[in-house]
Length: 112
Length: 136
Image 1 (tube, helix red, strand yellow):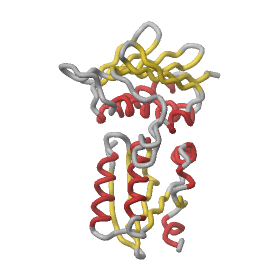
Image 2 (tube, rainbow over the protein chains, first blue to last red; image 1 turned 90 degrees about the horizontal axis):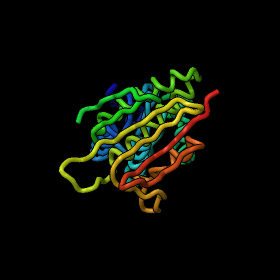
Image 3 (tube, rainbow over the protein chains, first blue to last red; image 1 turned 45 degrees about the vertical axis):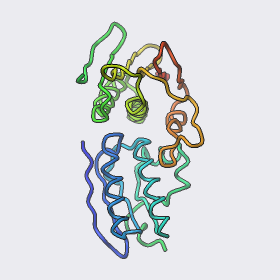
């Protein structure tokens, strides 16, 4: 399964709905999308990972890189993730404390 | 070299070219092997993630000079434990240096955190990532 990326704007945030596998092959596509959005002035990103069924350290690296990019512009990056197998990866690598991880788009957009 | 799989006397060996697009193929084989051990789906997912991660790290490493990059070989054996070795020519730093992270993620953090029995070794100019899981 390849990586799918759908972007939309809502409530002052840019939501990227990611589907498929984020790995060493597909992660550059997500990195390019984040770079493009930040380049366009979209500094408040929400990454919806509900349809992601695989994530490796290359994908984590892209997310951390994205977080650094938006923070450089006083922006934010929030993640939406309910899947235990993905949450486990964030916990193991210590990144669960780095990212704001939410259970739904409503929760992610409600946080101020 | 395209991906290939061979049944050996004790398990499965898969060799892939150093092409990131082929790592997914290895993950699928690893999941299939793990599923044959009749463990639960959480176990299958852990093996899929670990083998894919190890393979991705070696696919991306610098290789020794030569006419063409050597393949990455993944050997899986079901014995008293599920044993997996991922082998590639070249050497890697077994410890994460403070500056070696990929955008803030230490390359070995996930594997070390995921697997109780995980080792990095050098053997005749090759790097070997060895991991195993107990079978119930």
